[in-house]
Length: 69
Image (tube, rainbow, N blue to C red):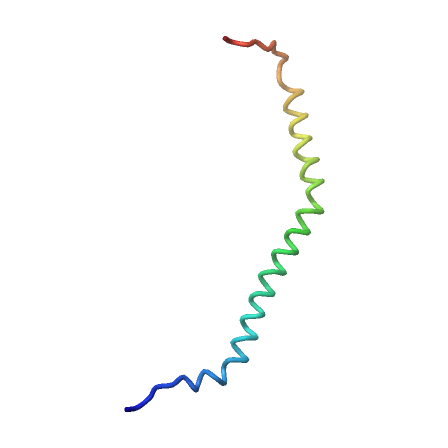
């Protein structure tokens, strides 16, 4: 009986390991950098949203509130 083995993949193992580690490091670096970017730029986005809320509330007419039972 002839045995089939995967000896040929043994030479590729370090190369495949380095590619795998590169992909994992790339994924985590994108995640960390985008988290830091949104953490530091959240203030400017909140200010822009606040400006639109103030602008829309000042342009609306004054209405009396009523409670329906």
